[in-house]
Image (tube, rainbow, N blue to C red; front, side):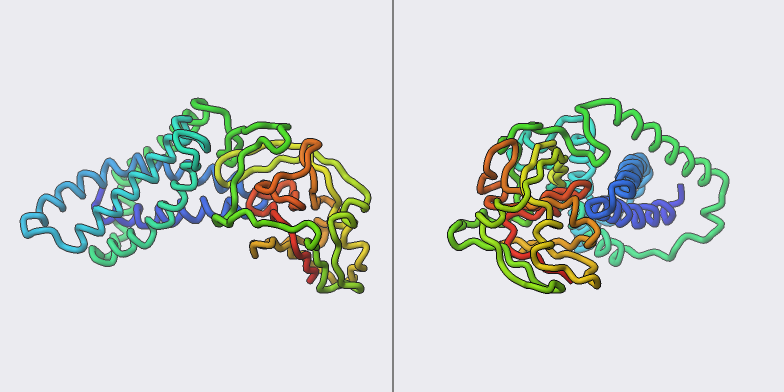
Length: 329
């Protein structure tokens, strides 16, 4: 396959992999599953295409090292190392060699994501230092190139299907099962490395403001006095695990009803004591739960005591812990 075609394919593939991986975190489930499938197929295709890149890179490095190591070689080597880490962890996760709780207590899926994001500027810096003119259109339509490209595509689809049949069971998001219906015994993950806040329950309040008739606050006893709702819901964490638990609390609709939401309201911003926040359409208020209990137990501090958001069909980082503010806009 022509060198410039291979390099262009890799230059496109890495940002596509990063974009599909990150967008799948926040997309609706129906869209996210398609993005993740595309991400896996593209990743396998990239591995297959690296066979051509290896030959190209080996000849280039051998020729250029005769004059000594320069900056472009150093950046290229670092980008190659990052790429191997990302692909290796992705493959290891797919077949079950690593998981969210092994071999380290910290999920290696997060490492896969962080190194993947870091790979983009490394790859762009490498491309800037080794830029070549884009391949002529004739190169892209040659029969040999088309056949090889189709072979890579078919091979990626077949290999992806095979990987889905090996290793531990996982959801379409890639997450593995963890401690279902176990009260507070499911894994503890904190978004953005926030520390678990120390909360004085006597002073803790949820503030409701914005596009409401009667802004105000509610303490813990006031929250418990509202009509209680119990729901089974799946928490699917971007750290690579999922768990189904029975949650008890108050629907966000019941909380807002006490403050008179205006007809012009369009969204709800739920904010944590740590500053972490997420927005939801006002139409979701009935199925969003401000939970105080899980599996019959009061929420533990790490799981969001005294109150956390339960947001079915949303990823775990959108389930805001330690809720302190609900802003209606």
